[in-house]
Image (cartoon, rainbow, N blue to C red; front, side):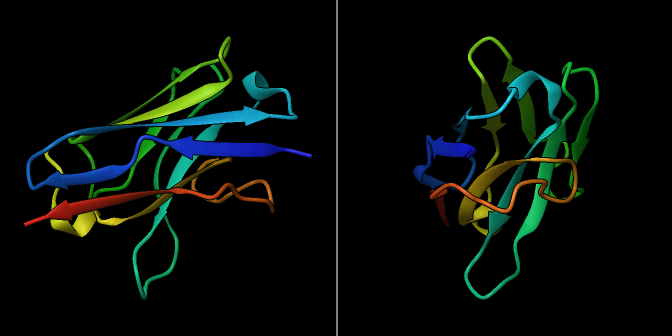
Amino acid sequence: QVQLVESGGGLVQTGGSLRLSCAISGRTFSTYAMAWFRQAPGKERESVAAIGWSGDNTYYADSVKGRFTISRDNDKKTVYLQMNSLKPEDTAVYYCNAGWREPLFDSWGQGTQVTVSS
């Protein structure tokens, strides 16, 4: 049974920064690409960023390109999302999962709320 635990969210002003973390257990972390997704109120969950198992390949949604950076530490079984220059439209619950632009696991963590005030 895979467990995903996201943390690091909070309330920030426009232009601020946050660093999200996602710890995974129950699976061989280093063999999976990992991704961050987000869901804003009234909207469908969307892919934000993804990183290959070795960290060499990354993907970013156009809306976050140049502002967000995904990274991973395979020893710690943790994936990170550094978010800079935050905008109100980044407000959402952020989740991690294995996969690339689509989630691999059916189970999700509780997510972490990111709220950007204008």
